[in-house]
Image (cartoon, rainbow, N blue to C red; front, side, top):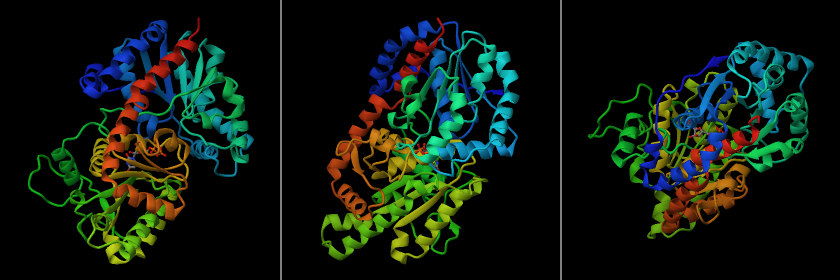
Length: 488
Ligand code: UDP
């Protein structure tokens, strides 16, 4: 078990200095007072399985900084594990909660699961005191609750960051496997109501994920800064005004022959001079990249076949670029599924004609430097005309939140997390079935050619994020749970 140090960062006054966040911060301070007073004397212990990568590790530092500024004692522990079998098992548990895999778990699995957590117990027992509050994130450290409860008088909350809308045989099987551990928890937190298993409903609160508006992924970027980042990362070709050197590792693009090249090597993207539509995600089949590409191609072809070449609508669609971006596999050592999905997409791309290939960019973003990766995502999203998240299944879809925060119109599927965020015809469009290529291509064309609506949807999107999906909304909900769960 390792205690993670959190570096200094944005303070409340930095958030308050943004006009659009000012009243949000004041409301937060007002609404959190009582709960903060009620937990004085207790330390909140957040326990998860990684200090880098993934949503938990990304959001915890900002949340901890704010709570600490308000006098809350909060610490972060990460469990350590060397056993391959442990990661294999927790990945299977993770997938099964999402409804995939065979849902088979053996007594041997249980042994590994408990043994690794037991190795992490002594340090946790040294640190955690009676009356503290413990939050366990996701399945990896789940068995710790019973072990801790034997020795300490502490309420323990389980925060689940994943879920599936429907109960299936596989989800039933995994919840059954986990039931000896869930029995030991005082309370549960899920991201969406639809993800709560029946058996846990009575002890559950809902806290949707959220963004930090001042993180590198979301902070405001001036136009010249965005252009600078796009240049530094290799997305844009040489140009004159630059303050900084290029990054060590640059963005790469899939070439017509399937190899990896630099983004403008074969055809210039002219990225900042044309409308473009962006989806940024992991290379996961459930993200619906392939379907998005098919719909984009259909839209272009139909425009060419039936559009009026003199009309503005025709020209706009003709000019539009599709950007599909995800992690460069060179930095993801252990993701055969991701590699397979990228290969499939590459194969489909290689089969297109040259003109279509020029209008589609499959970009591979370097991951060696998290700050640079976040800035590239930020600049790409800010330069986009429309942000798409065409997921076949989606836990929540932070990319949609990120896009709305940046005042971008969203085109999303009807997957639970996306529908929860995007309001149809207010902050973008929901194309219910991500595999319905015809309807997706028509929706995309409609959005591209209704520029005023797009602007309006973008503005509404930011308001929606401020109202519901920033770390302040999240912290209010967390503090309410702490207040209710603390020992009297
Ligand atoms: N992301 C990133 N770099 C990439 C691809 C994705 O930083 O190359 C980020 C993206 O901006 C978002 C997160 O990864 O913040 C993905 O979260 P989301 O909820 O959309 O999907 P998940 O990956 O959790 O299924």
